[in-house]
Length: 253
Image 1 (spheres, rainbow, N blue to C red):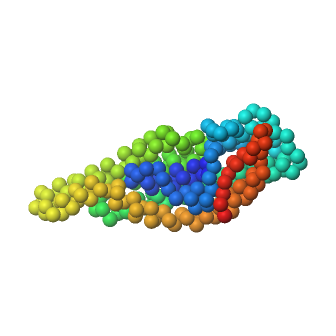
Image 2: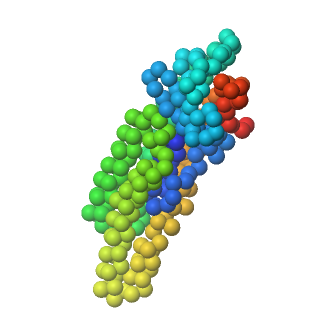
Image 3: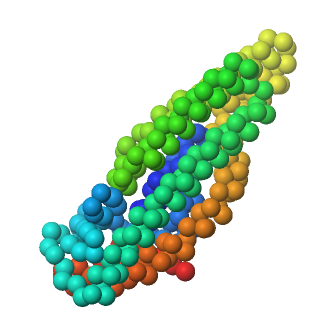
């Protein structure tokens, strides 16, 4: 569900840190909720848009409905359902933001816990903490100010993910590489080789462990599912000016 892009990005933070692709167990899988639209929340309207098929632009505005710039005639019941849908959608967003922020905190804690057993130097641990805090603050600020799922789509999100991974992972790998050099200089070639191998496969090895730690967020995600389902039920009969179902949200029970 495109409303959940904010959450998906935050929950995927753990993957960004390990240089993995942007994929996570988000509301689309946990709540079985999907949408072909992007979502933008304006002060006086809610907009769903997509490239294809028509309608490509759906606007809800205080109980009124517009599709591709055309007003849709509504009876009193439809007007009430659209008003309720818009209200409930806006009420859901702060809850999603809270879970997203919690996901960021949990990801940071997971990385710290994993790195604690790597024998990193005090200097590296301090620098890692600073970088984690900086990146977490940046993402939380984006979560707080974003009003559209377009902010989290495509190349922009992937580029930011690569920046995060590029900022953090080389720091850890570099410290482990230095540990390997120190071991080799002391004559422990076996330990040096093991450290080099571990540094080379750092992202691959950390990813599953970090994901396991992130499972603790799942109950918070599940708590959002009833609200998602309620939104899906409310919009079930919404139709555009061409008479076709809008299908703003599809959610399985």
